[in-house]
Image 1: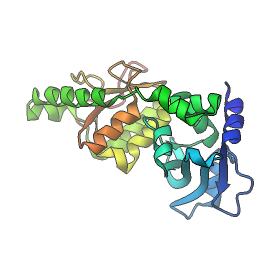
Image 2: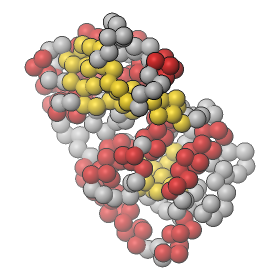
Image 3: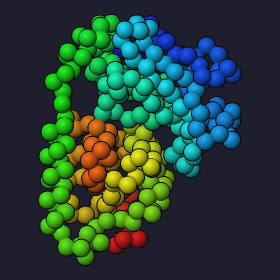
Length: 268
């Protein structure tokens, strides 16, 4: 199913309602490119623009879409934040990103990454979708990752860690360099970098240079984001676990281009 077919099908099952009188006849794209909103809401930090709910009220899927005006030069000029309002909506967005810079592309991404949504759109039956996906529980994986990471940290001396960890206050600088020197980053990677810059996750990640001798980390290339070369581990579920259980994850940006690393030597 291509993007247009997916969004057309979503319009059959969901009802988007504008939260702003100015925005008429909303759909799942609604002038999806961010520049449209940047000009209209340039003096507003965050504003709810849509409420989306399932046409079958008994399915109880309700979520809101906010426009956030925060900019980051070279990465985004504002973004959209999705906020689930019901338990069913939480399940729909479980283990996937809840921010994006293009609504149409985002909802196509949700379709491709949420098994519940995919089965719901095909079958039209929420119970069938939930039953099919109920055994997909990554919690134990997250617990094991936390333990492995803690054990690995314990092996390093304080001095060794100082030479491995990059300075937190330079997070934007590192990401800026990564974007500038990898101008063809995929939408999936840009989405992840936006999440890293958010206050929700920033305190739970430590950036490490490519040469760091750490075995358990989230790898970011120009095309993909994955943990320990394992594409089956849901990155956003792992990030949410780190927030909920107050642990830290290591993130390694792939600077293997033009013969060198963008982050120089040491801890600068």
